[in-house]
Image (cartoon, rainbow over all chains, first blue to last red; front, side, top):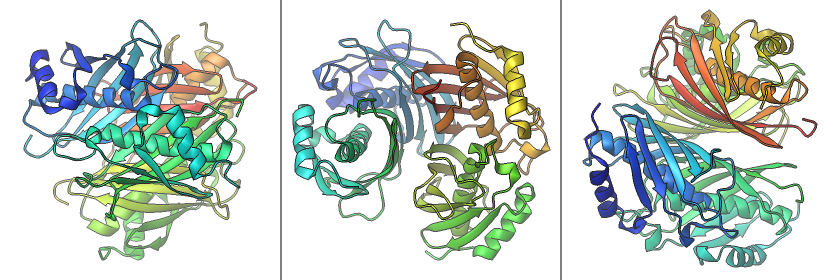
Length: 140
Length: 140
Length: 140
Length: 140
């Protein structure tokens, strides 16, 4: 299925709708299967010790699945997260951006399910994985 | 079992170790079973539309279970979140603080499990629930 | 809200719709908040060592939330599980039934969320907790 | 890393340790990354309507991650499931076996994390995905 929004359209949508996220998130690739999103790590994302905080990783996973859904259904709908299960497996590397690979596993009439794997840039073993469910409003 | 840290000690610990959280989190009660924590909602916690964001709720759940563990094992150990499964069930009320009730269901040698229920202040139906697992380092 | 089915009606529904479950599950209490269900532990539920298997506990959680939903919406609808996150915290006691306390936290138009805590009969510390989401079909 | 057990050794281990599973599970492939396991669907796995039940899928996910761990650490240890989060996304095809692809994402000193994707044989869209955590006892 052809995406309804391209990277530029998605990026503009995030900037407009979520101004408080600033330019934290950068969409790197967009395919039929999903998106790859970079978290440009800044001080506000860090825990003492210099590693990216859990809430920052949650936020990256959440935004990434949201973008994968928007790419497919377009900017009209207001999808909301209903569930997230996230496993934190390794400490992120200090001072490295995070790269989040997202696959949209299901895009149903009322529910969408995405799967993410998060890496510290340049590392081969994931720091976190998550599964997220979004509820898609009727108007979508 | 007697808590090893009281509310004042926990609050001071958070202020010292997590300065970037500012005074977002306020511990309201501490019992043998767990803690109740208030998120003082400010603009930085909000999504467009004025409701508290998912990452802010995740952060509240995460900090609350962490505090429930510290109260029991003391400030020495560096526990880390290994899993969180969170259900977002209702939109939080606009301009209301969030109240997070936490129960420590298990405090084992290597793993601790906490259970949280998050409410908008003054509401009777929960906005979110979550289960979190922490890994407790050997030295604990 | 008044339940639409009582214990006898729920029990008859399970016997008719899920004959392969035999009389494994016994509804003990039914309130506005939820249900309490007993798993009558038999050899087929056990792992080597004599404790109840993970799949048997999953099944108990799943059936319990399903019954809590049916009690509220009646026997017409075919609700299906969309997500379950379960924490196994302690080994169940050998030769003891399991008691599952279920609360229906949300009963929405398209989604229902239930919360369960499972105990070995006679024990005070839970063996497992879980959160489950059901999708409710339109006709409901 | 070289597996410590091959397919025949794993299959024999399951037959010996979990006799009640009969020959439900058939290991199809074993690689460094993980295992692929087939659930030979029989009447006892079915719900009314002829599709595989949730507990049967849970069991398949659970056994698969366990086998992936055993392949790496050998048959000595008694690993136990501590968490499973599973998304049921589509109804399994009637009368089709289930194929479960498992990746071992982390094998730490005390915790292992596996990721599974379950398909009805011959279908391209997954019926379920899950993330599971196992606790690995000290002696391992």
